[in-house]
Image (tube, rainbow, N blue to C red; front, side):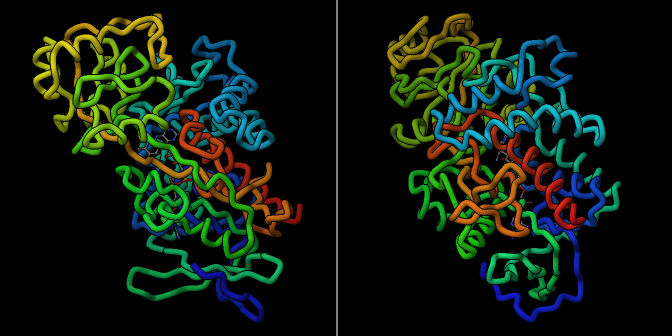
Length: 460
Ligand SMILES: Cc1cc2nc3c(=O)[nH]c(=O)nc-3n(C[C@H](O)[C@H](O)[C@H](O)COP(=O)(O)OP(=O)(O)OC[C@H]3O[C@@H](n4cnc5c(N)ncnc54)[C@H](O)[C@@H]3O)c2cc1C
């Protein structure tokens, strides 16, 4: 991923705003730049835009939207979301960015819904760990592909070109870090060069690169990777060469309940609504409700790197509304049992030990409080699970305009980053990820980067 010298270089094709990546961040950045009158081009490596966005649960947090008010949620606010981000990350994220993103989130959600008809509605049937209010706004089947389809259609309707099968391999930069253009490699090996006035890196993190995981997050190397393989850390590699400030590289979002061997993500309502995880001995080993991200390594550290998720009827009713969970059911990953003995047999553990684990109480040895949740009673739902890596959270440090910062804290002249390419809001490790933080960053930094890049090239 070299940075090539731009001195003396001319480009036959020149675009004011160039965006790398057609996930949520890239498509939203392009829409925002286009609205501000800047000609924009998106370069996407895949034949069809997908990215992590289309694999995701499509749930975006925001506090104080008009959708929430229409749904009767009157007391949410940007401040509450900000406090939740801070509390989950133990205060170890960039406070100013977290505050700004939380403030901008209602505007972004309402803009996307009103202007581009993003099919979002409030999630009212369960509350994620760490959310002090029901912050989530989701697509009908709680599936990111439903969002990306609408975003790509909106980009096309606006006449913004998306060049697919366009893998950006190199950037051309001046000595001061001004980006002059990019080199694109096509599947047949042919290359093209495109000049730009501003560049937005919306090409996500490095979850798909074992080499970078070994370097930055060795604990996550052996986790099942459920993100998009195209996330090869290109933004970080370019940033490293350019001398950008790169932060929180040990941070990631895990998921502690991915059905194995199916590779499908159970809805977290299987936990929030009173469900538990046990190991092959039928014993609980954690406060499952601390967060799905940190639960990934806890599951992975059990014998055989697996565990079993157990939940009840009320949880299943909610869980099956999520696309990935419905897929897990369809693929046969979810089994139903009427007795503890039958379930113990399926796990291969002692029924008496399992029976004891099912007796959840108001406050337990792991610090979990089951108060207000239904006790676990037959019929039981069971799935064998593994811990997964969903996406990385470390990346390029940005300011409030999503401009990439140098090591001295000053912004590069015309380089922007957002979504998974930028430093997230989770602090340094897996435990700091607040549910929905991925799309929160992708949607908001996408809009902010697009607006600021357009202003830059228009000389505003
Ligand atoms: C299973 C799963 C469930 C999730 N659920 C949620 C959820 O419910 N809520 C939430 O907030 N987050 C969720 N996330 C995280 C969320 O999906 C991501 O944080 C978000 O989609 C990132 O968006 P992005 O636009 O930055 O990246 P992406 O959507 O991954 O888009 C990046 C694009 O860049 C392209 N690209 C990469 N390198 C290059 C290159 N060199 N040249 C050209 N193109 C390139 C890729 O092909 C890709 O299309 C989930 C993730 C997964 C995997």
